[in-house]
Length: 184
Image (cartoon, rainbow, N blue to C red; front, side, top):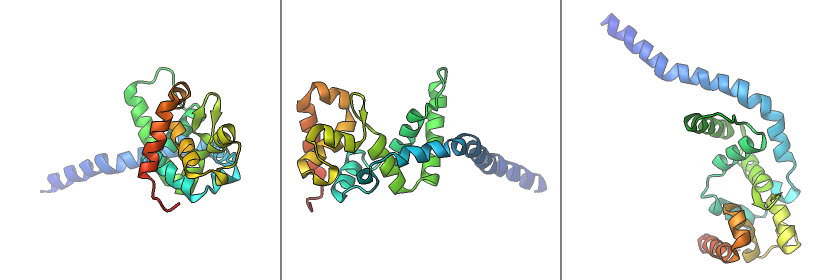
């Protein structure tokens, strides 16, 4: 009986405690050193990306299928070049999973949304919803009508394809509008 208790204790340590300690070490050595840079990525947001109109928030959430945390983690990895040329696909998935958990722990939903709105690729050499709003409609996010806002929210889905095929952008915009709560 005592041997079974010792074995089960070690199994618990190996299955539960060791991964938690490993995660804490990963946080300490990989996330925390980038904290200032991550904060900078959020702070470069325009005031409208930091406090976006409700319609933009809803359209961004619809467009991302409520995966803002995942997209924020990917944007951090991409913007800070946190990758290795020789990393295997398994390592890439593990690293992405760990960063997703760290983003969920360390960034609020508002920070994740702000990071997405400010850093997401919206076209050739451009990123951010505010930039796209001025580039396409020459007005701030708060002045966009619902169709214009849906167009901006649709862009990150496939900006390079939409640049060549505007009809696909229109289809994506119409899809987002069909999912939108009609309270606007």
